[in-house]
Amino acid sequence: GQNIDQPTEMTATEGAIVQINCTYQTSGFNGLFWYQQHAGEAPTFLSYNVLDGLEEKGRFSSFLSRSKGYSYLLLKELQMKDSASYLCAVRRGKTSYDKVIFGPGTSLSVIP
Amino acid sequence: EPEVTQTPSHQVTQMGQEVILRCVPISNHLYFYWYRQILGQKVEFLVSFYNNEISEKSEIFDDQFSVERPDGSNFTLKIRSTKLEDSAMYFCASSEARGPAYNEQFFGPGTRLTVL
Image 1 (cartoon, rainbow over the protein chains, first blue to last red):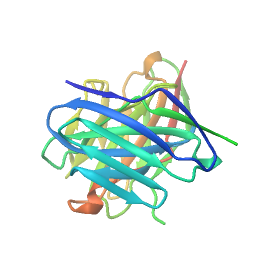
Image 2 (cartoon, chains in turn orange, blue):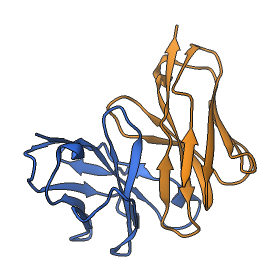
Image 3 (cartoon, helix red, strand yellow):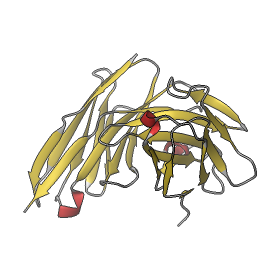
């Protein structure tokens, strides 16, 4: 089976840094995604990690530890528009079939 | 910038009716997916499709569901006899072939299905 856990809600201040954690248990791990989803909209891709370590992309960074089944998304210089749900998703399997299992999402509120 | 499109944006149907949700993936993409998201819940994988056949499907994707790529551009999801619990947002996604770019799935804007 598989299980993905994220905090349900987080609040952070504009201009600050926030870290959103994700833990997972799954067989056949083949990569972890972070997506952003604004209310009523489709998920949009933020990052992908398949090897251990930190991937940096502008204000967003994502970290993966496969041995710990742990990832985090780091958002720097928070802006009001960053208020959204952040979805951790795990890809299973060694083929191109790309089954991606989503976590429940973390609703981030950025306050002035 | 290329994008995945979906029609209609909102579909209302009576329980027991058949619905077809349509998607046009990004033109050079080879892998296609359907997901659903019940209001307030997580995104759930339904099915992946490659080379004109289903690659993988979830337990949600039962005999009431089918997918088709009827021509070179469209990718459809059919629900044969809708149930109340099929009410959800349905997202289509596509991705390129193997390689770093393959890792990103591009999502369409979704079709909100309401079953009455």
